[in-house]
Length: 459
Image 1 (cartoon, rainbow, N blue to C red):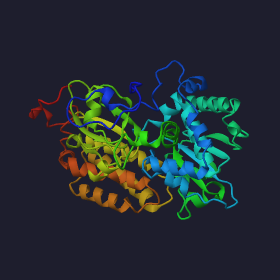
Image 2: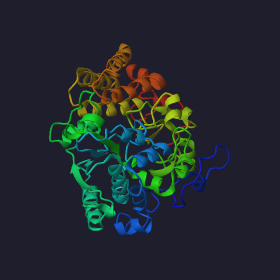
Image 3: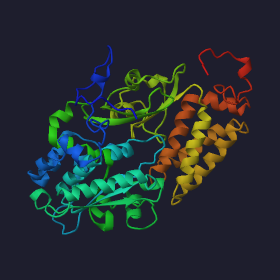
């Protein structure tokens, strides 16, 4: 696993000139991942652990919400909604229990930031949950974890036990009068439970399916009570904001997307791993300091936020990786899962595999997603095998259009995104498959390969 060097927060990356890790990386969450036992309470306390919680508990709950809101922290789970504003939506004085639910059901293809964070630094999440629970007047919080990640489940249970033993959880936390319990719940492996209302249904013991909204979770969430659902990285970022100050946090990133974040670099790169840097860096900068693509190959296409976000090409290497920059370029930052594919990858094959995943994981509640993803898979399999027709390309786009924005939740939108973007940038490659020539970038499958010169490819 690749990590940023532990040299503290740094300002926004400069454009132009030589890029170095010292100027680019901002290790905060990953600052001591390379220590022998970073997951223990002992290590966490040596790095000013729970200092942010002590500061928060000395403030009024509403002041904590305002502080996080003023910091500009945005949700790190994909949508980028302001975290403090989400906390502010919780009604006060309603006489109902309030709940905090941390969404750790990480299962987006290419996304791999929350699980390493929980494995290496679980107390950052627990401290963040303590601060958030105090702010929204919650006395019982939940971590909904991807069920297959058993080692992380065990480590979380141990971290929660340590926190109880040290007085950071339980009755009268740190003498503040706050009572807080945390329950770690392992899911059953359904991708749909990454959607917050499906997660809440699963947490209540029902089949995970998205709920009709309104009411929204802030009004009627877990057990029909006001609930905040936040991503792991969002909550784990809060202690540093309280401990080091909102101005420090705003000194990084861009104006509308401030702060540090974890970028998951994977695929055909020389050094895949987690890279913690300010929002607004570019993929070119990340590749420059991480070793670039694998030797002898070049970038063909990549995703800025996992398989559910529209793909980019090498023309987008200098797009700022923040919510505004990626949005203006026609995609979504999502979970910042930077999957990089070189010229040996067949786009049709990659999109087919992604679409098979979405068809398999569709909960079946709504017709556009249930039926649409099925038919997308049938068309794509025929196209990949060279059995498709030119008219199938327009049919693909038409089916995707009937799913996008019309399904019950965002799973349908995620399934449509790679269809639209791959047809936009690589329609000629789809046409090669229709003509029975296979993929022009794949010498093992292309009948036309022997007749063409491809000097840029090094196998």
